[in-house]
Image (cartoon, rainbow, N blue to C red; front, side, top):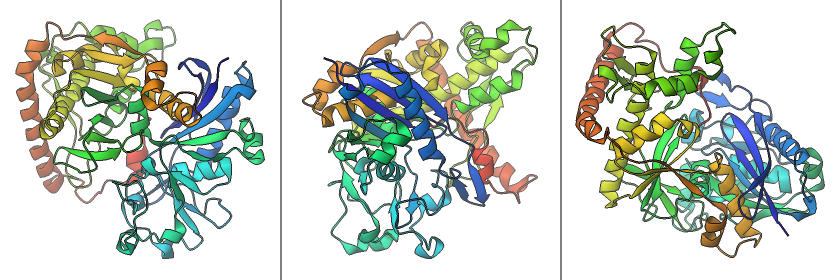
Length: 491
């Protein structure tokens, strides 16, 4: 008989819930959008009210209403939530203030008890949701990204008191830690009533959302490179340990004791495609081509030559804190190009930038990737997949299921519940990769174009620094409200 796992995949813009069997087949699903961020003060970006919990409760209810299988065969819930968030809880376990987004400046700083006088507990998004589901004060060790006093080798709270002092988080305010696949607790009667999940079913820890996505995409060793094509774009592979490098940082993986190396990335990466689509969308309902504008653009761009007839895109639309002068640019217009050139130039900008970032990471780690696996919304573009194959000079695969993070969460639950004996068995049973593209005739052209685009990025950065320092609007600073506006799903 089939066993079923419920996978909760909470992203920056929506919560997705899957009901999955032991072979990775999806039997029901639902998605509930999150409300826009509240930017209540400079530097503060929060999820309004109790929106993350509300979206999870509604998505679970909707997915289970669509599930026509035997609910008594649901043996576990895998909980994956947004990384880099922070929750301040009162003594009763409810939010002392709305959940802090990963864009909130406070998540990059030590906790200030004076600024949150009602807080009895400090935890991550996964710790808060686990508490709402189970009543326990437990959290996923592998989701503690940002300022937390965690020992990255042992995945546990350290013995050294100085570690707590540096983060402003005393041990008495922190939840107990659980590794991926370990039980966080069991669904309470109240949570069952709110979500439709069967009372008493165990909830299992996963990791940070990017790591869970890598697990669900089948990235199990350093021979495979993952490219996550979401609003934030990053390349990842299995790393050697928790140490950071000049071209990468170390991230907890969704398997106990394993670390991922994550390259430098692109902020607002695939967001740029949404931005372009909004600019050229027609309001004329009679224009049927606009019903699938992205598909139309994808088809048109496939006929544009490599290099987009000289149009180049630099995707620095959201400057990092350490280089606030960086700005994006699209250059090279001659009057002969159209929207397909713009679309392809953006895809090429992503591919060429990330190939350099991934190569720098691989060189520092001494790795030689043999294949590229793509996930996220951008993986749906056939033109993007072909460009990536040509630029990276690697075969491109994609996960058969579009929600790789959901499958990853289900794998954690399957291992924890004993549905599969170990992680490798679960991966073989539940993840299927399908060929997506192979390097083609444009691979040679992109070898020549990589130095060209690299030099353009360097010059645009120099020009941006000058323009921000000396141009109009220099008194204006980047605001969280501007950051939040138009932001898509981080994955």
